[in-house]
Amino acid sequence: MNSQLKTGLILTIILLLISVYSKSQTRYYVKAEAFNYLGNGLSWESAFKSLQTALSNSQAGDEIWVAKGTYYPTTNSDRTIAFEIPDSVKVYGGFDGTELYSYNINQRDFSKNISQLSGDIGNSNYLLDNSYHIIKTENVSKETIIDGFNILKGYANSTNSDQQFNAGAGLYNIGTAIESPSSPILKNLIFEENYGKDGGAIYNDYHTKMTIQDCTFKNNSASRGGAIQIRNTINSQKVGKSETKISRSRFENNSVSINGGAIYFHCGNGDCSPVLENCFFINNIAEIQNSSITPLGGAVAIYSSQGTSNITINNSLFAENHAYYGGALSFDSNYGSHISNIQNTTFYHNSADRSGKVLSNRGYNGSSKSFIKNCILEESTNPSIKHFDNFYSETTLSFSIVNTSNCDLLGLGTTCQNTTIFNGAPEFIDSNNIYGNDNIIGTSDDGLMLSNTSEAIDEGSKVNLTYFSDIIGQKHINAPDIGAYENPCSKIEFLASIPDISNEYAPYATTQTLTAANTITAARVYYQAGKHILLNPGFKVEGGHSFQAKIDNGCL
View (tube, rainbow, N blue to C red):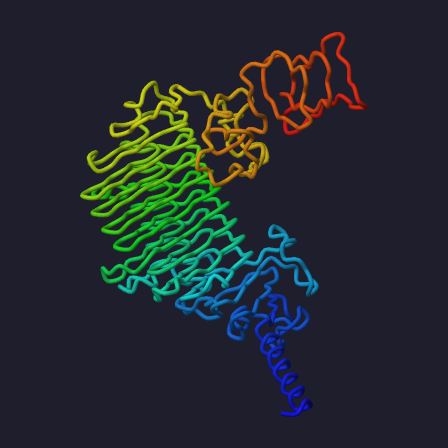
């Protein structure tokens, strides 16, 4: 082959590769205020008016930018039509509709530019003719992203025996391939006022591995899983592992008539290993509506039958949730095996009609074991923990604060290690206002933050800890504090004098007088705000160093 022919062949291959790559990176624009339906969708000026048009034109690798406005799955009354997201397509909302091509999507203002996906397709505000699902994904990879939308008013109430149309009114995700679970990533979404018999906002079935980040679920309802239901059983066969990770998300005012006010995991014959991190569960309810049914798990419920379930809960808050049993949590293993590991979590004023304000634990011909570490159990009455079939269920507490005088009062079947603090006083900043003055949960003025005199400060264990900050992102100082929130000051039991303050910043909180004597080489020390520093006569600063007192995060 001569050199010219060889060079020409190489150039042809390169051009083909560029062409394929360019095609795989197409970005489509959607704008509810577009002038007509004739645009090609390749710019804001020629944007598609319909999100469905953009989805039908997209293929793997493409992305869709959706401007503020309200979008419906269909313009007619067909309730079965949903926004079906193709595999490996990224769909982003929250745009003004004027952004440049190079715009950084992390700068979107979701409160100003609301991209709303609504199931209210029929008569306005009449639920019975709304879409069964607003979004549907099937056998999609983790390259499939849905980011920046308000998803509301789906209504999955079909009386048909087909599970599809009575579950997951906001989003229905199904994975039928054992080798590759359906694994969409959901970010910056608000699911509100959705209803489904199973999974009011989201339903996952069979083999799934969903990731949920920075999402809000409020006022959704169902029979099981007011906000979310995860299920992995098909025809009584083991289908593989269902893995769900939910982080930095909020669940408020969701409700069910059976199990799992916010989330219900039905592990069935398969295996599931959900992870909940930095999440808020507030005022979710599993409300009794039928005398023959005992609702379980005001916030989260897990049922494991013949399979294995392992749930991890870190850095989370469960407040004012309610159920018949298990005001916050319910773990039920029927011929299966369940283990729960709960760390740095605060339980506050959850309630149960019968027992188990914090959790109910049941191992019927199976086993259910819970390990609670670095947690605050601040409940109004006891017992906080209910065990059914004690031989098969157990709960172990360590490095935790409880408001009882002994372990037995927490509930039979509970073991408390000697690191448990009984009759503890977490000393929250303002437990009467858990949202804080800004009325937003998850900010630095939250009412369940620890005061500077709390005995929870520095009393946690960092052994096997895989995270280094608290529920709102504050770094752990020295040993972690007990509970979901880290006080910005570290605690010193007694501090009389510091002869030589080190070169490094050291955060301190103490009610003692701080006395600095002798030579100070480089004085930089945090001290509890409102106290004072006494420098003994005769102290001096040498070597060109200076003595500074700096106020930072409530510490001096």
